[in-house]
Length: 94
Image (cartoon, rainbow, N blue to C red):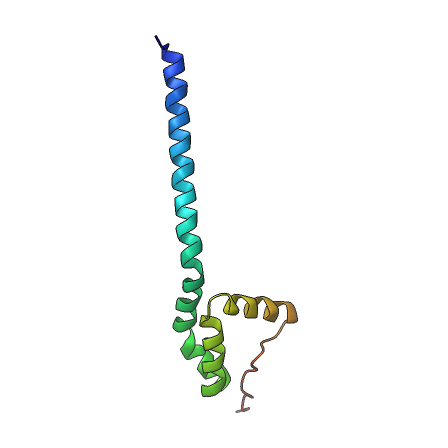
């Protein structure tokens, strides 16, 4: 016959295992969705990129940012360099 203490410990172990399983499941879903989230952000900012870089430059910049893993690598390199690969348009004084 199991004592109450033993049953309580078994219940805690099952609860801990269920929490670990749920955490792993959630982490897996997030890692699958992560590359596509960058593409969504790039689409939302395409207008600003076109205004800053011009039609061709903004479109190419956004297209590179939308490609999973390529956009992340591009951003890391740009942060390391301290400037964008595709320059902004020259501003007209006025």
